[in-house]
Length: 497
Image (cartoon, rainbow, N blue to C red; front, top):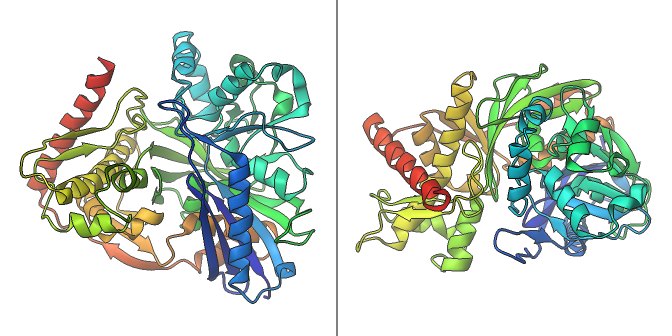
């Protein structure tokens, strides 16, 4: 089959464009462009949408330039995106009324506390699978509409959405205002049992429903390209999913019990739980894994807000390393972190603790502590957060893992993956292509555009590059878990009383 599929992976720190050959689903080119992070106040994180769009255009043009494909041979475009990051823009002009508020942003902590105190959380949790935390989009929308004078009265003049919605709007020349079920499920506004926006949910958060996008499946034609520099008009935009669901799909976790963890800016664990909605375990979420046609698949999810971002912090703020890859080399200079423990709660703690007031903590520093120990403790801290998520799933009735599929940029770190296998006591499988978020978007576009007949054809393309076997002694593991749990208590109590 001739032609290619294009995946746009719009992430928290940059945009990656990936080109797959339609004939064999192999990656033939990719390009990444980073953009600036804006921190106007402590705990606030924003993105400039013009800078994001610039990164999208450059990534597409660069990736296509690496191939011999004619842009007219694009069979379909798949979009995957940083979830929960919230945008409000003018329908007619595409101009945002405020910078995008990023998923990491904590400014709505007080709004969440007020909603919780008013007794709304149980109803929201039952309908959305989520809880009140600044992480999710709904309170960000409320904050923007509260702050931008006159915005609530503008009705359908304004579009509310996540980054996927905004990208489709831009790619289609303003022709479509849509989202998919996975991104909708992260907003606090979408009833994932009924599969529709919840009027009562919107009323509580004071979000006019006419501003919200149409919710579609993850694999269908939403619109066609129009007015772009890098691509001709008429290319179908045919696949869409939030980044973590796209990675679950890209890892071919098509059966209940299959689980993956993506190590990017944060770390995200998802486990397929089948086609029936299940109450979320304590401290975790139930979310939509994907919707294909009229069939919805659900997943349990746990998210830690800081993973690769902790390594960036070592590089950019502390200057302990000059490149992200250097963290592994320095961490290998020591056999262990000794007594050092790093809780990377640099923007609060996500699941299963959900403590927006917690802050990062390094415990056990001595005169003999080296940069190698801090690097090693950073990798330990990333892995420990995933252990907490897995344990919460098991405590909530999920089956114990027998292996974990991993992806994302930080999964290329062999030492981190070995630490993860040791602390979990399960095999960790890393695929041949760790860009599974983009792969998932491309696979969905291929389904939506008719390139792939079914998921069996996608499964055949998945290969494992390396498996990491646990090798840590049980006594050593138990001591490390005890130190970690003590550090978590300190990170929370020191800042929350």
